[in-house]
Picture 1: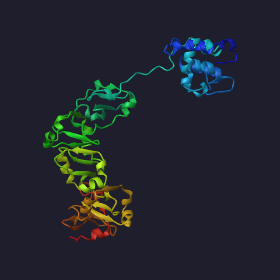
Picture 2: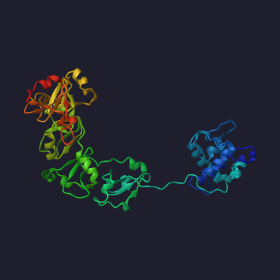
Picture 3: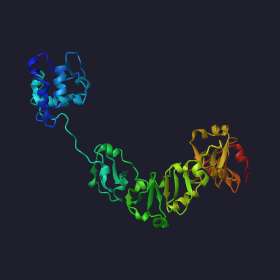
Picture 4: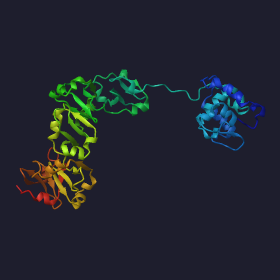
Amino acid sequence: MRSAARQKSALAVTATALIALAAPLLTGTTASAASVSTWDKVAQCEASGNWSINTGNGYYGGLQISMSTWRAFGGTAYASRPDLATKQQQILTGEKILAGQGEGAWPSCGPAAGLGSDHANPYPAGPSYPDPASLPSGTLVKSPNGPDVKVMIAGSGVPVAASDVTPDHYDLGKIVLVDGAAFNALPSAPPAGTVVHDQAGGADRYVVVDGAALLIGGTDWTADGYNTRADMGVPTAWLQQAAERTLANGRVVMAQSGNDPARYVMLNGAAVHISAAEWTANGYNTRSLMGVPGEWLGSTVAKQVANGTVVKDASGTDATVYAMAGGVAVPLTYADFTGLGYDKRPLEAAPGEWLKSAAAKAAPADGTMLLSPDSNTVWQITAGKKKALTADAFGPGKLDFNHVVSVPTAFTAKFPTV
């Protein structure tokens, strides 16, 4: 370290001697210390407060530390030279020098700044918090940096809403403060296959898959072996939302019981059958296969793929693009694809055999509403015929225009008018 008033004899310490002095300090001794504000005064005196200064005078950084001293007191663990280290790293090294040599290591600037009389720890260690993943299920956890509360469920942190506290009997007096970064990184849903129920009570049981909660039917509880798994209570608000979620498109499922060899792929809320030939040919066999409750699967197989879903053959052998309308796969020309706005929606791959069957259906399901570009008339399908709807059919408590499906004029024209 160097200042205008420094005597050169103050630096007459060999590297070997300095290392000997530093040895006990490297084990954590803090007999001498100073606050950051005091170190700032030293830096202002030594280097005009410039922590990255290198004038070529043989002393570097805000504390004007020589290379021999920097090496002797372990500074090279941070950077090759003091001026290349951060302010904190320079101060931490300065703390070791202060403990070994006292404020006289900076003959003028040290005493002037009160370096020897300030015994504060410049960087006190913050409180140590546990990793939430190490805590048992059912533990309420919170980061010290925010108000959110989560409950630990099989290594995940399920959010607890304010409305959950009383009905779910959560005791906020038992919240455990945990590491903030680990808290924020917690998965928000239990692992796939976890059996859960409403913490507030009730007989219904669910299995979690991809963040969705699938209802377990009464016959499935034992037949599918769910009764052998841990049954975890989860926050009411989270469970209500999870029960309304659908599995992600492309998720491959089968009945958990294993009694049904059929395989299905999820497509916008519906489970679409995969034929034996397509299982391998289309690469479904390379995806993770998840067992789901049999009753839930049966009801999901019976659902129609959501209206407006844009699909194509997963094999790639048929380039035709279709739009789903009431269970029917309606073929689209390129002009239809762009003109009806389907080019702005995701294009989903579907098993070819299922797609051919959907394209061959005679008419959309009753109640399906269609709109073609040739007019502003919205048509509703009933028993294979179309009926024009008037504007007063739409509104609160009535039909929703958002459920109308845009289709080519030729498709609507196929159906006779009621």
